[in-house]
Image 1: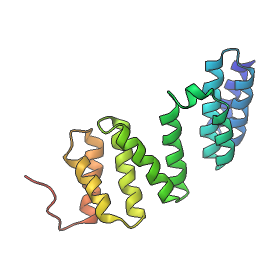
Image 2: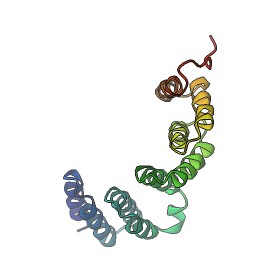
Image 3: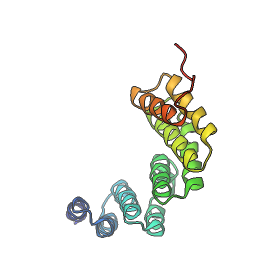
Length: 168
């Protein structure tokens, strides 16, 4: 039964019916035989509730995940999706707090660098251009992936077209 409900949830998600898909994932989690399958279903339900702008429902779905999993291997994913929820809803301080946490936790990993880039974008929205430039400079000069280096250079050129922030 859980697998059929999961397939149903995927179909709903593919049709952008996020709230209905999230509810189907909740049902799938309730019907799951294994606790790990239930945790995965509840996590996906939370993500989809956020896409449907139902933050409280997302938090309730994630609260169904076993605590050691929610605070363990899924903690960073929950933080990442929460950051994006706040960014989309222009809750800049909340988004910045979450992106900052991830960027500090994983400074040399792709997710940490992505979080640092989006932290800088969030700081721009807060009117903290100089602080944003510091983050862009760190990314542009760092050994990270070319993608975030390129995006950071692009933002630096936009923020400071006459700038002398690149050493040759």
